Length: 53
Image (cartoon, rainbow, N blue to C red; front, top):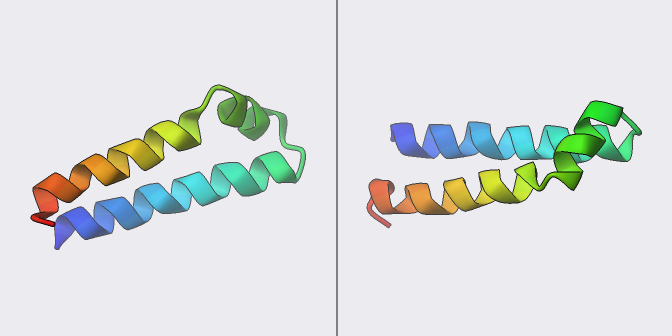
């Protein structure tokens, strides 16, 4: 399903942000401090409603 693919891609972006921040990348660290990974994870959970789960 397309929703699952979107969720997987969004999850990959979260992983990228976390890895980048851990590696010391300033931009990724800023995104992490601003809470973007948590926002994306919330959006992923909300998409479950569209996926019928």
